[in-house]
Image (cartoon, rainbow, N blue to C red; front, side):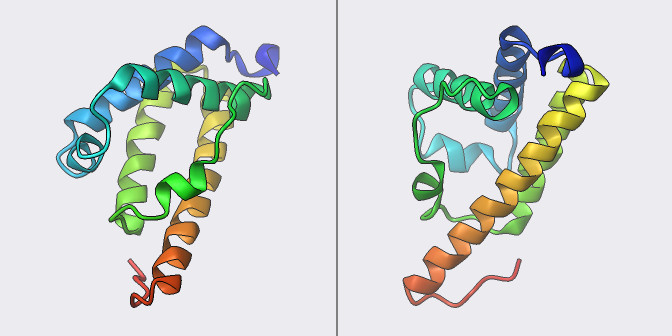
Length: 131
């Protein structure tokens, strides 16, 4: 996998740190994250583990991302912005093959988290948000 994509732990660390650096400065997503994350070091470490597991199948991440995202005040437009920043960062940090690899996974993750957040809203009795 690493040979085919050019991805490595170092590249994934650069990807995660660069991406979340952009997130923190983003006028749309920054405030959502700022309300929930005060100490970025553990979050970034966890996200490097997550992407290591997702992209390189290392099994380093041991968590449940869906429940952590279910109650967030987000709609599809937020996920689109998240993907825009992720694609941009992947293109800057990864080889073309590596960028395709992580972007495909990020797109699936965004769809999955969006569906989970919509399902949680419906279970809570809120009107579905089609945005």
